[in-house]
Image (cartoon, rainbow, N blue to C red):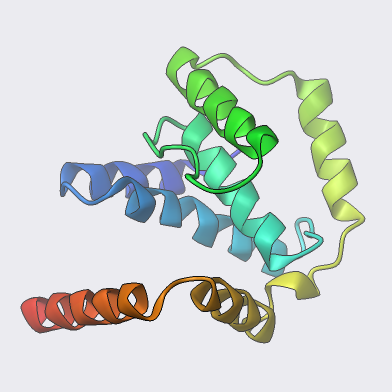
Length: 146
């Protein structure tokens, strides 16, 4: 369950007309913080990010399912979106079981080096023109915010 402060940050981002991925980023940051504080663990940086995105969708962020990936992942994303629209509470027993399973996982999966490796691997899958376009957009955003 995401913290109320995380939900508020995501709502603030939505009010500022920021993208769904920016809103979801708040949940990913929250998940990384939880793992670093030893509340629970994750098997990999990728799993930590996936948990954050799932929580974002369930909290009502309109984040579309991934374009690439298995059919199972897309179905899970759609299911999370539906749960976010329905606002149905999660069963306490299921919630406890999830946390109990995650407590057994390592916390080193979200170290700065592990996250750096994950980002590098994700960037390698993108084309050079795509990486260049995002770098240019980031530079424009930095210039605009100064």
